[in-house]
Image (cartoon, rainbow, N blue to C red):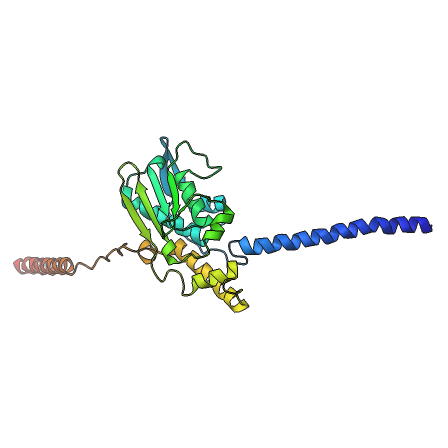
Length: 278
């Protein structure tokens, strides 16, 4: 009996060791996810309606929705939503009512983030695992002129440390004509101190974010994402004019009222004259 007990205890030891290792690995993986995830604990986006980006791929019309971008990237994030709206606006400004061919689209981004990259790669057909017969062009060139050739997740995270509002500029161009439209995010779309808080949250620069700063950044992240999903172009981007509201046609209304009054007077006169004739 003693021998059996000793065997049972020795058999338990490896199981305990395995359990400890598993817990350690789980903790490490959770730590990585908390750093790289889009925004842990973020509220769901509000209800919204966004028109798809429509392109032609080798004669086939394709509709690209914001949900397609979210699925390709892993979630609908701030940078992905911004890039989607920038694609919409740039294509509208260049092609108008026409539908662009995918291989006629060139996008130059100043923003080195995964969310924006995945969106622009999807639109241009230049990313991995995208079913496409034709491809446009997509480049990342930082505001200082540095061209990013290494678009790995690790490198993009590294070069994105100094992101500011200046990075949120995108050129959407037509290859066949060379015409480009510069899409520039307005000041005020991102809340004050957003990028400083981002450095603390993602990189611990100059120090780790406090619990209050984490909550503030999370709230700002959610609000900015929602702006890109629900706000009109003129509230998001420079150089887009708000459509003028149609003023009521006072002259036309007065003319109609005058005609109505004259008609009533004539009708009353006609009725009176008939009664008098009797």
